[in-house]
Length: 446
Image (tube, rainbow, N blue to C red; front, side, top):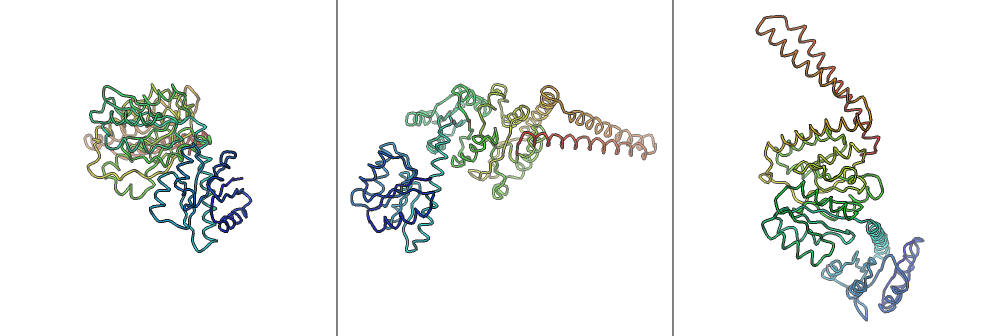
């Protein structure tokens, strides 16, 4: 049942609106002809939603909204008025109104829309209450982000309990801006690195602080304004509902984002994504390079932030450790904050080769830890035999070519044997991947 407080100074409109809303058995409506009466009711009863007119004899709807905020009443308010203009709507939304709806000559349409807004406002309020029941923190690594860090901090929703801003030895005005924001918002905890250590080290510092203060969920957002806080619920819900332990953003569902990607970087990301899937065992993750993530405290405690790779590639390393411990991961679709333009990518080829090296080491570590030490699965031997067969086929193929070109020996027998070994090795590798995918389904990742 959703309890609604309806405030309207015109008796006929008040009664008509009440009758329509009460046709829905899920809505319980208390009607008031004045703001004073509404405030008295609010002192004695908790409502899920407030619906109020704008122009009223005592105070207008905006003033009522300010009064509620001053009294600490955060009940969602819908401005439902027959008079007003675009400026009134903007003021209402800026001062915290959940919705603004102007009355029209079509009562059936406007009341249906009002009812929908009531349900949406009540659901949003209940969702935020659930978020507040959990200690949720946001970790923001920054380095010389003086133009963006202020707006980012101001946009973090109220249901976030703590905001860790890790300043990685910025040389511009970023530290001063962080301190100024922290004075206004007590949720902000500044953490400074005196030496530039990289994004991975900044994330590790934030994770350590989150564990120290017993945060239930830790969200990572970048300091370059690519990650919109309005998508936070999509990252939090799977973890709160225990459908996943780790949520990873996915920008690649947006065709425009793929179109604007520089070709070299798109190719590099595609290769890294493939190798990350093989190394981590999370075959369904679409954008593992994405740094917009959320992790549960249980998962964070098990992987131990101190063991995470400190440089670029930390996000890939985290996935490997999570899969090894049997935690579930989920994709979360969201648009990129801005399209990537040609020339904006500072990643050199050496970056990709270094990260590929990390993924190879992580793959062998996961095979050992997950399938030999913590548990046992024969897919390890499929990978081993497959690799040996493929290597043998390559050596045999080279030997066959040498014999043909130098010693003028027949090519058919040796080449045929090399192709058979290549085929057998490929089958071993593919079956190993299929077994690994089956293990992912068993832990519920999707």
